[in-house]
Image (cartoon, rainbow, N blue to C red; front, top):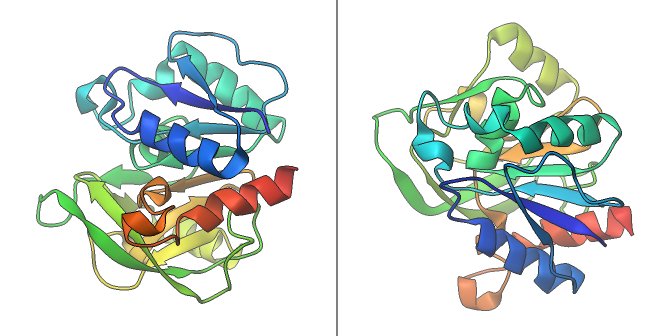
Length: 221
């Protein structure tokens, strides 16, 4: 399984994501700098990590979404290549137009950093096939701008199409309808605010995040 982790100025979870991918797939991902204009051939997964790309100037993810490499990521996603965006990566995906909605400042304007309970809303995607529908899992969050927003028509559409992947079990950041993760219409792009790469070993306090990467490996193998 050939994978790539995109690295932006200010990314601080790129190594965490790379370690998680290698732990599950057995192969280290290519670490691809944001200034590159082409992706390696034969990628089975492109991952956008958490952090504070470009210092979160303008809006979180806004500048990264216009970097050279994101043109290639958008084109690859259009061909069906799986793309995973975690935390800041989720913000970049919405800013790039690969996912609907936007990520705003948390309700209460506070940084949230703790384990949170999630409900698996859709277990039929390439990202969630190792979970049970309705299953309760625990994944850490660490964000200041994780408040997912979309207008009611968009929310109704993604809910009706089964594109909500994960939902917060309790109030965390003010996200519309408690949405924690969203899948695109084609089913090959997932953005989520929680960090599955931080919950892949028992030493981390649990392994609920590991199954996301295992599911991907199963789906693209």
